Length: 206
Image 1: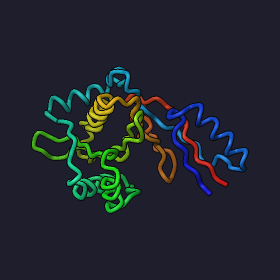
Image 2 (image 1 turned 90 degrees about the vertical axis):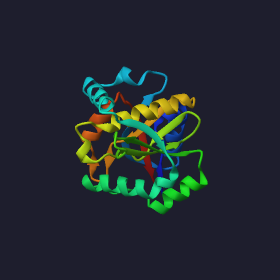
Image 3 (image 1 turned 180 degrees about the vertical axis):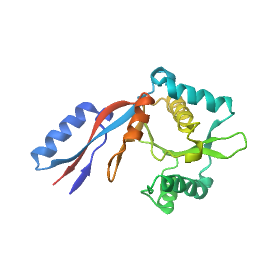
Image 4 (image 1 turned 135 degrees about the vertical axis):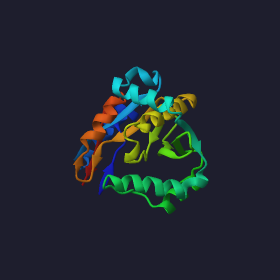
């Protein structure tokens, strides 16, 4: 039996109680990960590293814009996300059919967001999930390597931050920086540069 818990920041007291209870039941901590989140009660730029502030300005000066996309674009978006992951030697954990099913079953909780160039091309995409009334989760962020000098994912996160804040949510979950082969140091550094606040995320096994 393998149980993957939510980050401690979702419910610190509840997470501590859950950890204690599972260990009493014979579960062990199989994996301890660092998760990052952005508080939505602060200005997005308040925690942003100077290098990422420069990239954010560069995106805006070039006319890049954040948009919410229709779920009808999911097949094209999935191809885009998959291609971006392949450039980094990674794969998507869900199939297109499963994503479409989730959007269909929970239309109020799944969103497709993008950063578009002045010509209308996608420079970055993500699928975001409304976990609950407090938490928005940046689930599948991706951008082609060709746009690395612009780092449009910073603008993408600024848009998500504004969206979550406008909807009364309290934190934007950036997820962990763990790959199957171990820690992704560059992703961890990027989340720190975004101003991400660390918290613990545990996986239990018995």
